[in-house]
Image (tube, rainbow, N blue to C red; front, side, top):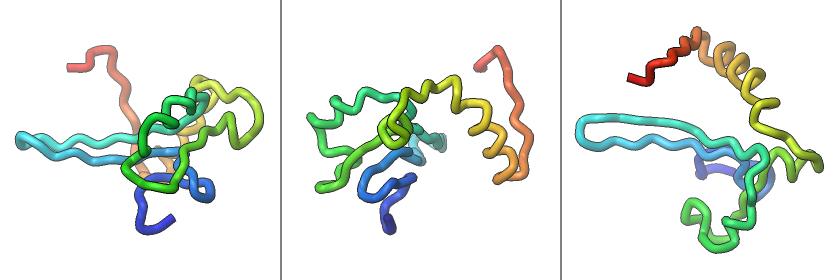
Amino acid sequence: PPPFTGVWVGDSKICAIGVHCGNAITSHGLALNCCTDLTWFEHIVPCGLEGKGVTSLSRELGRHIPVDHVLEPFLHSFQEVFDCTLVFSEDPG
């Protein structure tokens, strides 16, 4: 919910979105919780937001949702929304 970043299901974050700037380098990314072990979040205040929770696709849908079932449709939607073509490389450099 505004003004918080990310993707939310009620008061629980299902996807974190972030940007980092430092040493003249900007990086960005996202983390979509598919089948994450959510018990780890019981030991921290996720994203520094008191009273907010964390959820996953598996929890919300009531069944196991592995990353490999989400990756292809996610990348397809990303290309459509941002009107771009993703290029994959074996060489990370």
